[in-house]
Image (tube, rainbow, N blue to C red; front, side):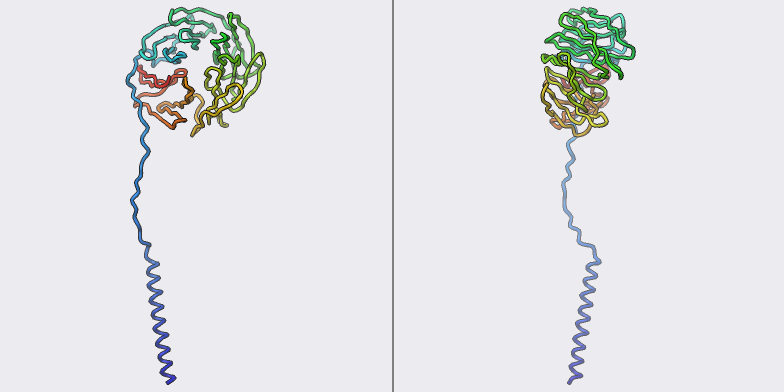
Length: 331
């Protein structure tokens, strides 16, 4: 009886062992198989391509490809074109019709608009002229005696006060010729600043200066005051100054405005850009321009130039240019 029970127990144990082995085998086989792949359909949407700006309606201008300087009048209605040979041509911006041509005794090297009909011109021998575009009348104002090594950086003026600052500078210092309402000239120097950009406010009687070390100063009532570092002047409109905030490599990170007392951030850029690529239109809108792309960073919009064309800066205007044809894109 005991032997029979032992046999039954042994049989049960063997059966359990076989069952366990089978279960382990099945489990091992299941683990050895890769998990079942569950496929899903995903819609991948590429971002829309940037729009390409058409060149038409285009304006033809014979000497456009030979231009060393292009700058627009305050209203944007006229363009002053300075050729590589130092000759000046003024055209109607929307038609290309030539309004005025000027050739001085020496090549013209600098052009600044005073108003929609008047220009300041500076020649290679440092003579300052005014040019009445509509009457086609040029007049010599002064022979400027400039120290060796200094070059013309900017002409800053206020049409409200008629004060004019003709600024020459080098890495070692500057010479500034100031003309008052009666065209009396005063020669001065703003310390040893290596001035790069300048702007004279419309009515606030304040001259803003930025130097090669990216420091910003204001000169008012005979006193110089530092007001910011790591910035450079981009433009000025009325009594508002626009500056680029810079990183350690001198690249622009943001555009800010300054009203004489407070700073306001206009736009923060997604990527650092050269300050020279930034322009401000009449409404204070910021644009960033490269050879073949134009961006309005505040709106997140970008436009491309068509094949064979490029963008170029003309003062506060931006032109789309191909050969000797152009179209005004921003004024």
